[in-house]
Amino acid sequence: MKKFALALIPMALMLTLALAACGKPAAGGGPNATSTGGGAAECPASQTINLSQVDFAEKCVTVSANQVVTFNDPSSTGGFHIICAGANGTCQADANAPKELAAPGFQIQPGEQKQVTFTNTGTFKLACTVHPAMNMTVVVK
Ligand SMILES: [Cu+2]
Image (tube, rainbow, N blue to C red; front, side, top):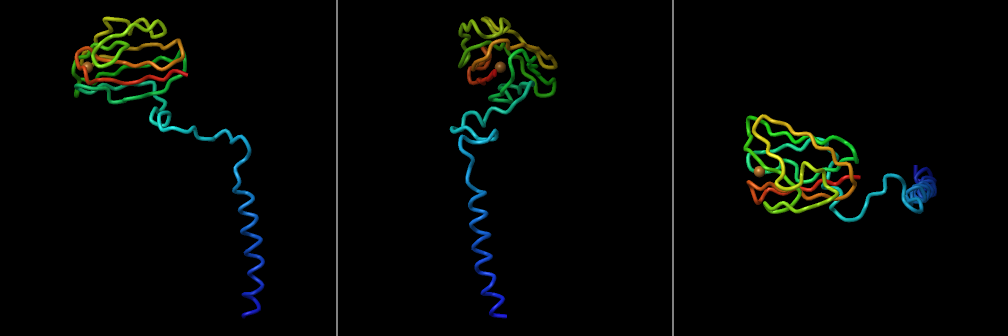
């Protein structure tokens, strides 16, 4: 029995070395290499931006250029909003933002949906002039 156990030791060592070799990351990182910094991870891909009574339900979404983004104001929780490119309740001119988001923004009532197409890539901050604390980011890739 003891002999058997001793024979296992070199096998275990070899196995450990083999696993260690496999565990080394490929140079340059694979296609699944994660980016450093927490920002990107917090922006899940979504073409729907839901609104609550006083806020964006999604604080950050990622979409592809020319994808249609739907702002959804459910009748159940809905408050009315005026959404534009900007921050903290103030619209800010952004030539790359969709024209629907130019000041004074678009109004959305409970039960309504509004479709907006982001044609330009970039990071867009959205605000609501009704609710100054209502801010979100749309990342267009
Ligand atoms: Cu609002």
